[in-house]
Length: 109
Image (tube, rainbow, N blue to C red; front, side):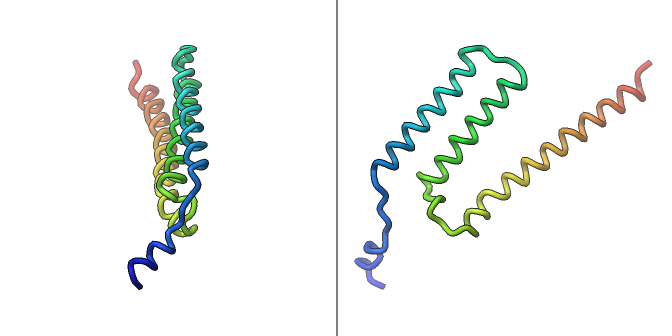
């Protein structure tokens, strides 16, 4: 395959897509700053910040890293491991609460 044939197979995305993505990233960033501006506290604050962060990261991976146009198997290879790690972290969080409560009950005077 010659070099000219490689360039013919290259997929070009319209600039409108990238500008729309940039605007959406700006809106999501403004939302995360708004959470801090209104001084939300506790679980709601961190939940919203994490949601905005994950949406921005997903948008960047999908559009700028061209994951939206890849085969499904490759997308799964990139997306499923972080989801599995997140699930294990949630399981460990519940287990740590159980361990802490058990220790407080057992060792309290």
